[in-house]
Length: 319
Image (cartoon, rainbow, N blue to C red; front, top):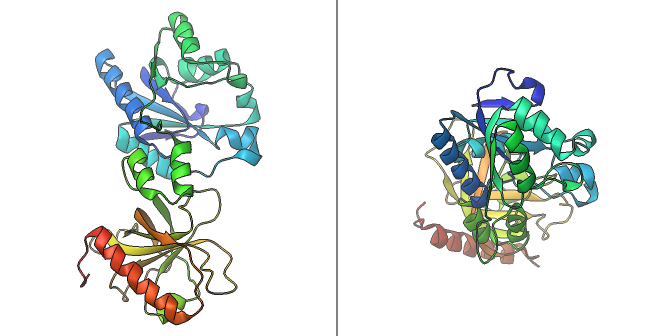
């Protein structure tokens, strides 16, 4: 898989391609449908490579930064997901004010025709592009007649709610990780490197792997969840490990202000994960975040949380 970080990195002699364009944040089922159709078009036309064009940063972060969404996936993870969905190559187009000012005609000429030598373009039916979003699928079809490519708009998937990155974010904001799973076609995950916390979990008998949940990446609403933790450093340790997961600031204890994803691997107190990159996958919400009046009440509830996590995940008591 080739990853181009600008149009200048695309080889001038690149073969004809089928191009699909979008933010592809999270690569949800709607995105996957468009990519499958792009592959079908490539096979039908005898084209060897399907190229995804995505943008960094998200266009809204440039045009209306105060409304910029939290992202479901950073660029490295997005590239992985695009590859898994069937994309051969990815052009990560740096989105700037200058790019935002390109007319639809300039975008087609620079990216689709001169840059990627497109034989076909496959996008979602609601795709808009160019200055003030003046271009649409009809624009692509019209320009393709003169520039030797065909264009196709794919109807939006989902129902009753159309699958979209915005919908997935709304599910996460409500703690509905199961709804997010349905739209993504896989569990929502958070990735990060385990950092040292205040070790209260270890003192209470529930040592946790703590990953910061701040910045531009999305995380589920504060609460407790059942899910899985997986190492990403090559030491699989048997694969994904069942976990009870807390998201939030832990209001029972004073002084904690940063949101964290804290994962207790069920039945395990022997794991050394500081500095280890991990992936946390969310299966179901157990409860909302609570503040407890005593440590005893907290520990009792943590025991109940772990039992519910075992039941949800189908893990025996001995795990």
